[in-house]
Length: 231
Image 1 (cartoon, one colour):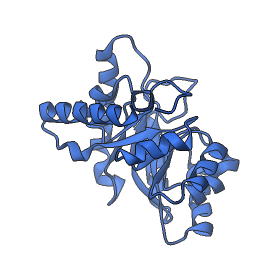
Image 2 (cartoon, one colour; image 1 turned 90 degrees about the horizontal axis):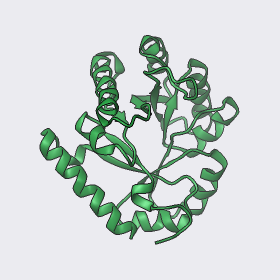
Image 3 (tube, rainbow, N blue to C red; image 1 turned 90 degrees about the vertical axis):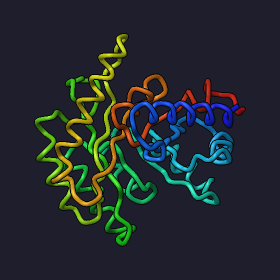
Image 4 (tube, one colour; image 1 turned 120 degrees about the vertical axis):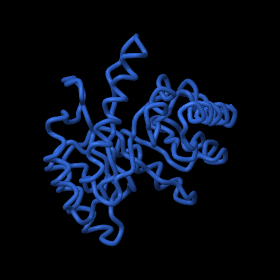
């Protein structure tokens, strides 16, 4: 069933891109594999998924080690604790949730120690509605963090990540995506040579995110179904 769900998602992306005058190849599916088994990840890989996102560092490290026979790209999408930056720098290719200069600097230093010739791809996490329970920076804080991060030689600044407020009104969700996309374009000129990533959209709202310009959509349930069953 994982294969079938992945096919359905890809068709949905193609339909939205056709209506939005976008190339569907510009949208990367990031399978959110937190709490999922290595068997489920292998099934997803067999169906063409190469990018996987994790929220819990120790759980992720175990999976990364067990699945090192596969050519997978690992993304960290959870909140970052300072004492976890060394592990993030060592095991992941992407970190989506940078929201402090201290974290950016620690990731840079750790990457220099363990993988000095392979910059870590990072996104800055936005919290545009000021939700206290969520990490991320406001629109007013973007430039300072962006300027700091882009000067760190062992990080490759790629763009923004956003987790919008949950609304019952899909139009309000789409407005949040549109705001993030507008900021993404505004900062393109100072974002640097690798500024190409807008990570937004999850299982319940990815179509709206793609329509507004998402380049990475983070999908869990819509790909894997309810947790606890390998299909």
